[in-house]
Length: 416
Image (cartoon, rainbow, N blue to C red; front, side, top):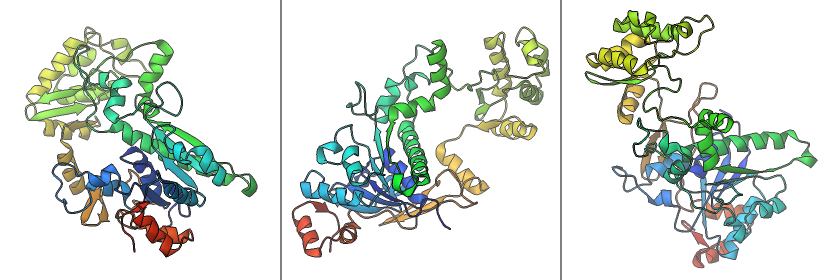
């Protein structure tokens, strides 16, 4: 099917997860993405995850982020290499980089440099802490930003317990999504202008900003009222006493009986209907208010103890089925692999296959469907520098010059 970003050309100088995920979205939505790598390849190309079965092929993490892109391996530290990237930038609608602020500008590849070549370019800088401020030139990794922004202190039950990080690079993924969103918005604004007055944009997307969006309600509460969020462990955001995670006879169960109506249904399944009239445990006025709202506990520890005792002797799998049947969201706690196997069997998830050299990677897709279809790459993840010769030919560079650039180490990867 026709894809919404067909005809858009992207020069992508990003690496690892955040920037490549942003350009991954653009590529799967139809953009031509030219991945710029150093001559030896970027770190994800050279990093196999523990337990991977395709040791002879490309790492699955690299394939999943870079399928459908073209690869040019070039050393921007050499003037001829930077010249090549600038020549490509003249033809590009979008330019992405995720180095520390000021790094690519040293080689004449900063926003002002690229805008001078392509005035309507959408230039996206992805960094740890943004392009300005005292922290701008700090290096950043996901878990370090989780520590800095308070995210590590949001997890866990006890205010005095050690910090707990989210178990995957959640901020890297979030800033990649925000990068893709902001790029598509900037492209829309640019393309809506008159041909002679189309304006580009410099997008400043950072891991710090992304972490604030992930914790948005809590950040707003603190900025407005100065109230620090409390560590609530596996309880739900609403604070309802029955939005929690319970140990059952055969595992754990998470429930979301947030409203009085849901609480009544849960209490009925557990045989605890009397809780709904117990003014010592619940704020009965709030519970019976006609305008609704979330359930409020008067004696939270005592109410929690009653609920925990009721779940302790029951099956998590059985409770999941019974609660969902009456309209109370609930899920038995699963491992990722267990969920993925089950989701494939039930049809809730339809994996998208990304091919590559020596690799065949299944992915969960982009997270949405267009017209009932899951966007998928038309080509596999590229070999290092696989498209370098063709790209330089498109720029009008002669074969003899391309060969010389390879010999001088300006270009890496495959060559004719």
